[in-house]
Image (cartoon, rainbow, N blue to C red; front, side, top):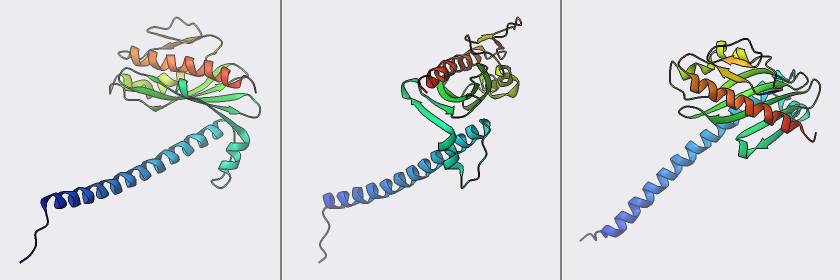
Length: 197
């Protein structure tokens, strides 16, 4: 006569196998996610070096980045400041801030010699499709170019011609203002990041 495995032992074996399989899949998913994050970070750093006027090959990128860019983390601000070590004085700030529905993640380039914005790029946003999501459109982002950072820029519903104004997206004033607030905070952080150099 065959001896039956006790139900408690069968349940324990089942839970052990299930836990092992789940752990294997979670570890694999995490490894893939970490690899993707590393690729995105490298792509972003390459974009920054190019914007600063640097050139490199895939083999020389790490050395070129370390030689030409100083990186400062500001965790409480949800930001990283990248400062060009040469001339002209330039900075790039990656900063996250609240949007209407989710965080907006921006990369803002500054010319610190002329105290102006060079460009703004949206890295991530989850604003309302067809309205707030239009913050990624060149027609909106190009308005930030060459705006002085000597004083905060303003997002307005209708421009009056003042040099510190950016026209809000019709129907997406809140999302437009969120971008403006992040850019203003990034400008202040770029100046702060350069202090003590």
